[in-house]
Length: 115
Image (cartoon, rainbow, N blue to C red; front, side, top):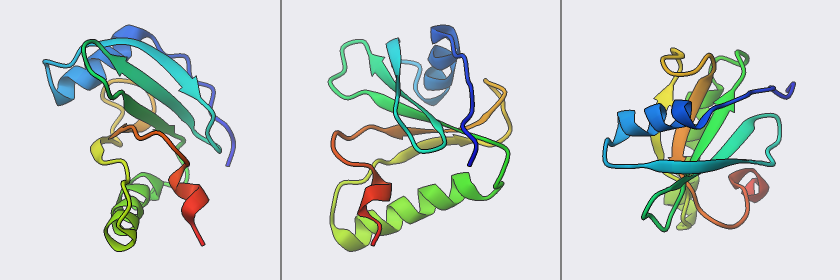
């Protein structure tokens, strides 16, 4: 999968997060290392746990929904903490890319648990 190049502004992330919950206040963000997707940790004012924004390319079209579904299966069957998908936007309402907004958990990626 080709790596995306995405330039985000804090104001864009604030709009995305506030669409989910107007009481949340994103104050900074940082790009994390992902495998083929741009992934950003979003720190919230007064909150211990940040959120995660994962940006997807146009192909494959089914990947966003599949990742959310598979993560749910892994969490249920393996009895481990898995990020919750809070919002999926495949219509590019706030930024010109498809994205998922999830909870953030420290540790290894879900992909590293496969197998």
